[in-house]
Image 1 (cartoon, helix red, strand yellow):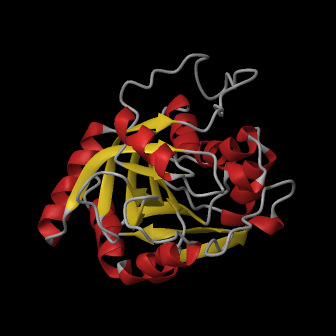
Image 2 (cartoon, rainbow, N blue to C red):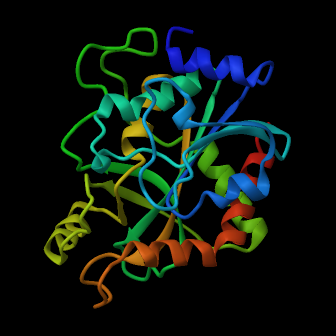
Length: 270
């Protein structure tokens, strides 16, 4: 391990070796408290030179434990480009997970619905994404220890993991849409004109995270799966003003089916 944060966490976690990395998005941190049989936790603030979560609804700690028999290292709260962090800082936690042994990377987020027919409380499995953030986390000198200079992104979200997610949703009787997530830098919500443009580009949902983490994880050879909780309709589609409070309220309303979906997906891992 060459990253100081990796060595620090390895010392704190002892013999625990995670196979699955999990990132919990806005309003979704309850999963760590309710579904992870924890063996330890480490606040981000305890890790030297590590970023801090500054957004309401992001607890800001690593939680290690088991879910459905899988060893999981969870970020209970993520970092965002709009918080002022550079892309290299967004890459750091993903690479820490890789150095600690993570092979499967599961991302969650709160997103605005762009596709016709989407409603707050729906779930969407990411089949692809559009990076509209104006930056790439792999820019600069290549991290040769993790991957090649020009990583292939033709299948950013693992087909087998997506199939397991669809099967899990079917068993639970949950509707699970599948579509393209477009990432913007934020923190302002999008304008109606931007949403019309994003729909023309093929976006089904829009958010302010996930894409940098996916790119870094694929560069490092991890298998990636991502699920959006549609917490609001995107700007201009409902006529209502958009607020972060709405995001948190919708996430709280669907906490049980969301947790069942994530836990069920982990239970299906061989």
